[in-house]
Image (cartoon, rainbow, N blue to C red; front, side, top):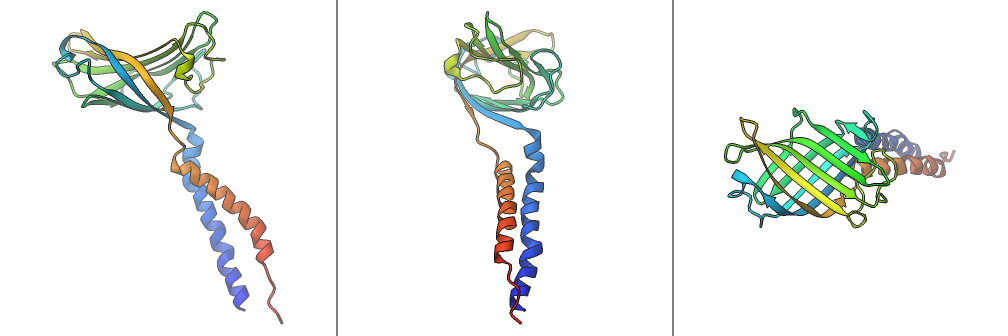
Length: 221
């Protein structure tokens, strides 16, 4: 009876735990989200931004996109960006989900490869100018850094001939100012915990399938 009681506890609960692991992480795994962090330098600041964002400012940020986004044209992926955060000195902007711009563009050409993202951003105004969009361009003039125009991961900085970023501001009259520079690092962020949990759930289910039969014992009569 004791053995049968243990089986009755293990039987329903362990598979349920493993199944919950799969369900909790299923949405994150299905989303196919890819996250990168980056750092860079500032090379030019124009107009009203100079007093707040000097050339000595540090720059860092992260962006996240869904690599399962369907193309809206050759190498063009609208709405792929899910998150963006950018910090320059003590000033920060984030992706504006209500903005008009959200696109990743990939070009594979013998005359030059390009991996470019451009998205609307939101943040505090500086001197009457509000942040309008952020653009990141990773280019290889030799045309060897990118193969195909599918929504692939950004190329390694070591394979590129230029890495430009730009944050553009506009005022009520449509005039624009900007701060720009180059990237010094671009690093893939490890898988989120939900995806790791998804793998753990799979392992648990496999283990239960093998171990359940091995541990099953009929009670002695």
